[in-house]
Length: 255
Image (tube, rainbow, N blue to C red; front, side):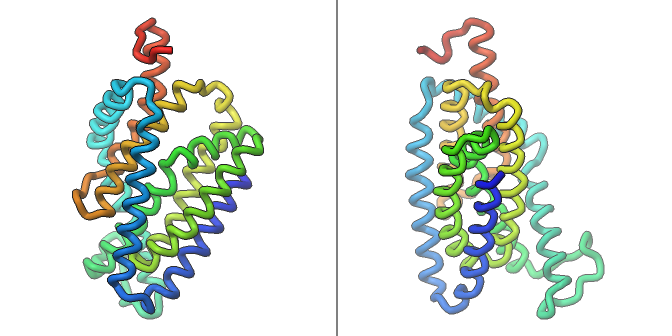
């Protein structure tokens, strides 16, 4: 869990610094930084997608995963969580208008949307990458390389938080909760079943995550606004398809 706690720390510090300097930076500069991050995420996503040994597995994983995500309406769940946090923060703020009921709160659309966009975008970016998965699992297994991977990720997330918070505000700060919960869960899983993850399972999960990152980059580059959160179940489907194919003797993952 040491790597996860360090990651949470860098996200918090980066977010606070971004919020402090956000108003002092031209909006044009903030937009350019976010665009730059979108391009980097696109590059990382394409690179990770190439880890697959059989494109059929990520294809089926995305198709099945997004159907599950749409049925569960994961995107709405994340937006409601972000909206509730935003309303709670606004109610506690000295500069915000009083909100009598957090459930019925209807804060200004711009502020609410900025909070939701910052929280959801940062949470997805920090929690679905291969470093979040592999680093957390290996960290949970007690391997030194796990902490090293999360340390690298933490530095990247810290700089990303600074840029995101300068544009989207306090919602990025609350994404530290997502990092703690998601990566902490991966670490717990790693301590129990991480050693049973085979290389094909990890490779296909990484490739599927890369495709999801490509979708996230489209959102940041303002090309298209896919409901990225609904694709997250695909990350669980990918290794299951590998196991299923091997159990049935189907050569979907040629050696």
